[in-house]
Length: 225
Image (tube, rainbow, N blue to C red; front, side):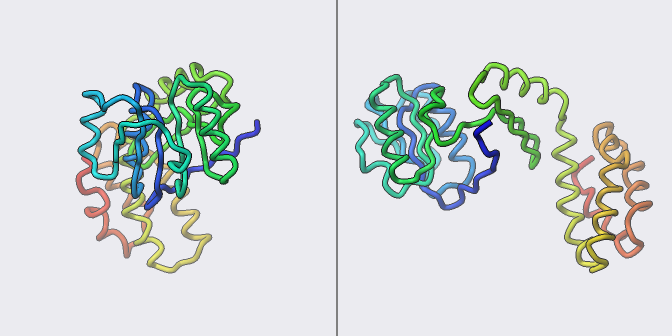
């Protein structure tokens, strides 16, 4: 496999999407959710009704015109979703020459990266890729995982995000902290979140946490039951 799996931070980055059809709209929406500074959308057609609803997001700028070479300048990520083979190659080559991350939808040979199928449960993100060989299989696996990983996984990560700074604040060292977090993850706490058993969750946390943190249990469980 020639692809290196990474998660990219789009905060304050400028992005470009060429083509705003059905697939393009999904890419635009996904990019805009990740906190970029801007998402420039270029399409020769005026925005569709579905596209117009996305334009309420101030980071998205739609321009009804053809693609220009200078559109890629200063962009961190470029995605092209068009049925114009010549244009797709043009976008791909411009990005390659400038070292810009580029994805041409459904044409991995023109891409410097491919977009995986994604399962999202709160802060839990699972990315599935077949290396471009079978997007259909990646989507099937995504559906299977979507059923397996319920919303309680996201709740568990909320709990751990709240708990972590308090544990680290005790300054008991990496070995202690690693063992504590491992024990909590291995406990039935996840099942308690799934079943709604708050009393058992409190009991598990009290059994695992140092006495100094027992007063934080209400805080870390707030709103999870």
